[in-house]
Image 1 (cartoon, rainbow, N blue to C red):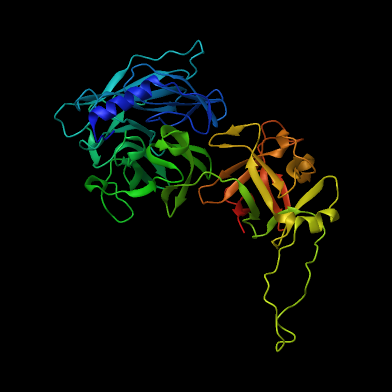
Image 2: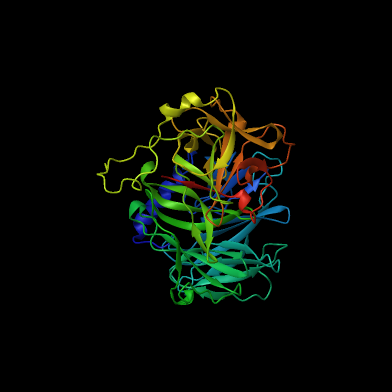
Length: 485
């Protein structure tokens, strides 16, 4: 938690502690959030000051998560049937110095209303002295999927970033383990693993100054969990290297405190906070973005934007459309016969909805896939569902033909149709998730006739046939693109 002015920082942190988060769809108020954890169908994240946020669906967040100890910058993970929480007591300039402690504690559940809700006594796993070249704050937990070993990284700009090994059974520091310096010039670090590499994500820049904060998240990678971590240009993070993952964009500034959630194969999200959301009065908010991988480097995706699109199948590049008769436009071949004659150069108008909608059937119309031709039956308007429902990182979407209420819907026998009017029924609500390669998967909130527990998505069953089927990240049948024309 790097500060430009300690007095300013402490006053702003006090505001964070005393201001309760209110119900906000997609913009909950928090600072230094932990990695999001799921418990009994709900989502939790913890922030500086002892409190945190709870979400029923991953989209609408409210205050209510609890952890004792106060302090700053926690992290959390589900491990071996329990929840492990790490946090820092003082450090980072809090209280006027850099003497700090990293502590861990366990709980059987994250739900404060559960009879099993009880944190264990906190255990110190690292500390720093007031004049030490490391600052024991900003804990980041990491379970190595290749070895099963548990690690904790910590530190700020006021010295080195360090990593220590923890005992997986107790959460205590591994007996005899010596801390290792792995980076400088960042803080709020976290380690993840992908495709044979360990990645150290650190927050660079200044915090706690609202819209003036310069926080951004950078990354380096290593073949060993203890480093060295180098960026895409070969610069060691122990010497200040780091490749950009996310910076200020689209009305939010100061991203920091990276967290990763793997939804399933090929679908991941990242969490952080934004120091200031310009649309929320400049307050610090929880941010959730798709996590993409480009040439084996993580990069933040964008929140899906409402609009009118061609929905294009990755399988062949054909477009999702209504199964209606093709209506020709006026005019045939131009500029071939009669080359010597004067030619008018007026812009050619696209076919309008009014020209063709009378040729469409009035009831349900099947969906199909075909060549994109700028036709009204191929233009889909995508907007957030009016009921405010959502999932981890986004709202459910309403998908209709532009200029109409004719809605895309899941149907019996794993079919995909359009219905004349959008009613908000679950089979008309769609989840749109960006995959790690930048394409999208599209799945209905529910599908008639699909057995309970079976998850289906929109697939290209053939070059011209959309359907509902099983998700397979390794198949282009599962992938779609949204293109504006």
